[in-house]
Length: 117
Image (cartoon, rainbow, N blue to C red; front, side, top):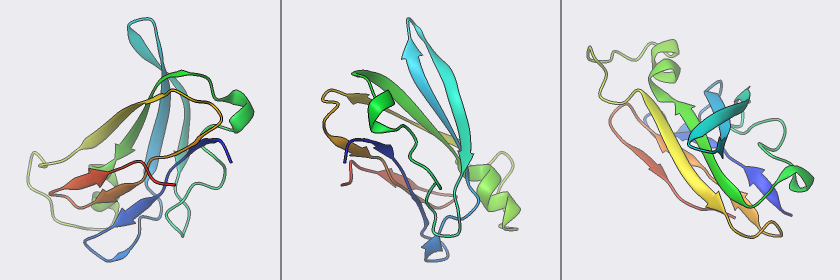
């Protein structure tokens, strides 16, 4: 399965990151253009692929995870200003026949991503 997907794990609570806002953008020229905004479901995944296989092109993309907003909604006490706010993950699609899964493991103090399967 080709295309782009993501999911969020809340490693503070040991649960899926349900309800996190995610912005998806594509690099056009020198700037990123917002393609869509989605929210994670109860499983910490998006209901649909971030980008379907037939729409995926070779190029550079950004997934922006709204980490501060997510933890504030949960009532987590954060410093002012928060240590982590929005986390952009910029990556390249170099082969449109491959699947690009870009997950986020998040706390108010650290974030980790990797290319999943």
